[in-house]
Length: 94
Image 1 (tube, rainbow, N blue to C red):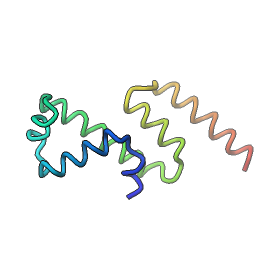
Image 2: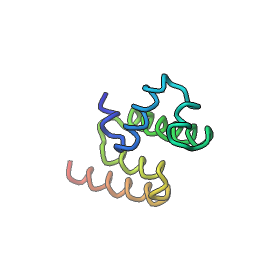
Image 3: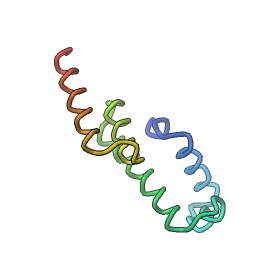
Image 4: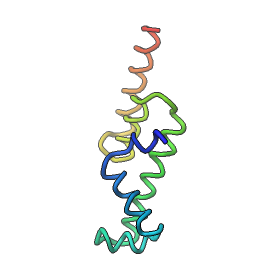
């Protein structure tokens, strides 16, 4: 369950609240005082992060960069460039 640890604390809390609400997105929308579509969007982003972790495996750097793309902190183009440089440097040092 190391995927949970890689999530931001806010995402971990969101999952906790989801479980406490017995999986009800409507109840979660009430708790956070937001619309159902807003809750659904946030859940979809968390699902993407979990899926990304499963795809990337143990490469924490790549996973973190792609999480930043999902959170819209970094563009996909910049993320790809960073990952490419990272992989090239990793290859040199192997």
